[in-house]
Image (cartoon, rainbow, N blue to C red; front, side, top):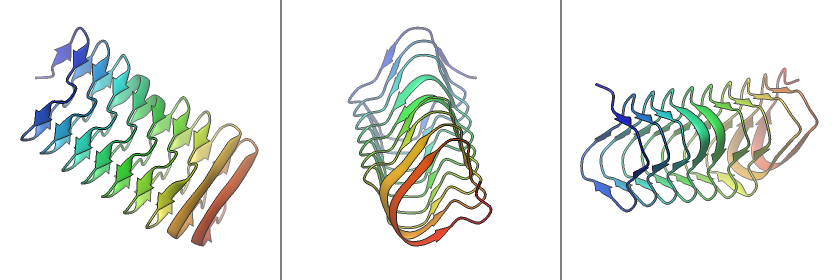
Length: 199
């Protein structure tokens, strides 16, 4: 049965020794998970965050699943560490900030929708990162972000003016099929670039 938090949920500095299950949970107000340690899997799939969601400096020691979650206010993951797979497929963000976040495992943002600004400054991606078919409706920033493997932006849609980078990628940056509906500046150093059928 899905859990509903009617008031603010503040769990700062808590530690979940096993899996943390918030599948389909509804946070009616603000949700604070700053500096929380998840020692098992963190399951937030299909959760709804109606207030600000703060995961700053949180540590996910195993997989973090936010698939199809809805963040109706800004989602903050500054300096968070994802040791396992970080799943954000089909997530809807009103605004998202991941400054200085570390993704030690696969980072999946496939088909995510960023209705507000999306910030990934100084983020470190140690495995493949996928933003395939993601939609960026406002500003997007990857300033000083570092990708140690491939970065996939295939079929992503950038609806407004975008400065993409500056970032570094030790593998391939893929923007094939991407759509840029406003002026875009691409600033990155990569081993290879694929941009077939980009518009």
